[in-house]
Length: 361
Image (cartoon, rainbow, N blue to C red; front, side, top):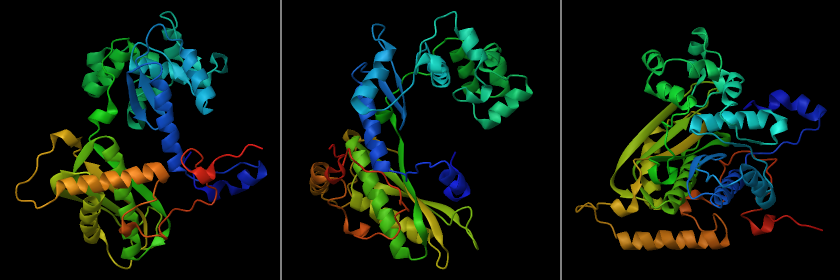
């Protein structure tokens, strides 16, 4: 997992493995479609990651119906795990994926949990990272069942309150509530590796402008504003010669979702970070301190036409939604970016691009 392609090229050729480049536009759109399908079964859906979600499922819903709907409507195979807590549902999902007899769906009854947890290695328990797993193994806690059977207060003393909650969740006590991530999200990020090392500040500026445009669209969709903009710049871990990995942040005078303003402050941070003569491989923009756009407080001493800015961003989004992403963009992004990552084996974006729709003969 996450191994460089060149290390496995011989194996790929030997077994005729199909290789595809990262297709973030397709992944993001399919992820949104997955959540829309889940909403058909319950109004309470938490977007945990691009390919995972927690759902408060009504008792009358057959879990297998979710898998069937995903296959029928999206053509995506999914696994469904059912449990009284988040941690137990993740445990059931682990078995649903590993045990072919479950056909991708597993809802253990009360008598099965003991056996289920006994077959889950401690490192696979949701919330247990590599370091905790190593320490727990030293304490002879090797499976999820071993952890469940420990005294929660003892685990809290040896680790922290988060570990205690995991133990209680494994015992069936709900400690981690279902959250509305879109509402509570406090930060957003857009980062990329460059297709080739960049040495020119102007080329890196194009990438930063693209990141700001992507993030601006994202927070406007969610009805949010940002109060901080951060930029990171890196030569990469395997860079020859001098290495650099630095981050610079800026506090905005007013919360905003304006792409032009995001780029303006990101550029200021980039100028602080950039050092001539280095070969840069990665960059990214982070937005933090996100707030609801209805909670905005204006600064009396900042001279901005807020209505005009809002109208401009709404027009930009409307055009791109109708005619495709990137049809209209800020000039700073350029028309032929040299920073774009290598995507020689890019699959079609057939859900968001008219000219890449699948053709059926």
